[in-house]
Length: 155
Length: 155
DNA sequence: ATTGCAGTACGAATTGTTTCGTAGACTGTT
DNA sequence: AACAGTCTACGAAACAATTCGTACTGCAAT
Image 1 (cartoon, each protein chain N blue to C red):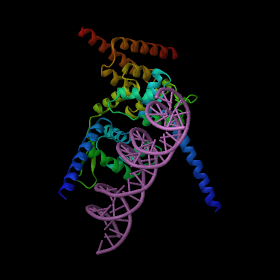
Image 2: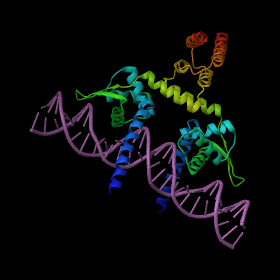
Image 3: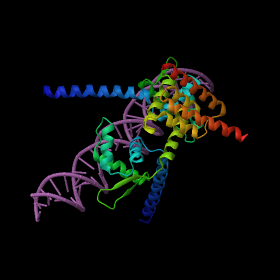
C-alpha cells in the first residue's frame, strides 16, 4: 500500500518534469497551428477565440472548427505561449512570447536543419528567388554595409 | 446495394487521391527526420542504412536505433524521396530529389509561415544575427547588385 | 551442417498534434 | 421561468511521425 503510493508519487513527479521540459522546448518551437495563432495576435493584439477563428478561416480554404481553435489556444496558455484575461465571460487572449525572439529561434533552427547552419546560404537562396522589392534590396544592402563597417572597426 | 458500392468506390478513389497528394506534398516537405537523411545523402552520395545510421548517431546525442533508420528510409523510397539499389544484399540508397529544389520549397514555406511571405524580413533577421562572414557578406552584396542591375534593365 | 552475424521486412506501440463532439454554465429575451 | 444563443471545459478520436521488437533470410567461418 505504502509502496504503491510511493511509486505513484514518483511517477507524477516525472510526468511533471517531462511536461516542464516539453513546455520549455515548445516555447522556442511552436507548432504550425500555434504559430498561425501567434501571428494573428502579434499583428492585431489581444483577441477572443471567436475572432481569431474567423480570421484563420478567412485566409485558409479549409474551415477550421471553433472548438478546435479554442482547444489549441487553451493548450497554448498551459504551455506559456499565450496569456488570457478571464475576468469577463468571453476570455481575451494575448501572446505571451516575443515575436522577435520566437522568430529568431525558428529561424535559427531552420537554418541549422536546412542549410547546415549557413545563414549566407539561406540568404542567397532567398534572394535568388527575387522575392524582394527594390526598396527592400536597398535596405538589405545598407544593412550589409553597416555590418561590414562594424567588422572593420573590430579589427 | 448499388448505392453502397458507389459510395465505397468513391471513397477508395478519394483515398488514393489524398494519398497521392500527400506523397506529392511530402516531396516538397520532407519531415525533420527525412531531411536529416537527405542531408547526409546529398553531402556524401549514396550510402547504406548502416553508415547513415552511424553518421546520424555521431552528430546527435540521442542514440537512434538501426531499424528506425531502416524503416524511415524504406518509407522514403515509397514516397519517392530516395532510390535504392537492391542488387546486392545490403541495399544502397541515394537521394531521389534535388537538393536545390527541396531546399527552395522548404524555404518558401518557411518564409510564408514565419515571415508572412516577406523574404526581406527573413534576410534582415538572418543577417542581423551576424551569422555570416565577411566574404559571405561581400558575396551577398554582389548578388544584390546584380539583382538591382537586372531590375533596372527590365524597365 | 551448424552457428553467428548482418541484413531486410513489417507490424505495432509510442508520442505529438489537430480536430471535434458533447456537456454544462451564463446571458439576454420573451 | 423557459428558451435560444454563445461561451468554456474536456475527453477522446483521428492523424502523422518516430521508434522499436521480432521474424526471417543469406552468408561466411568453423
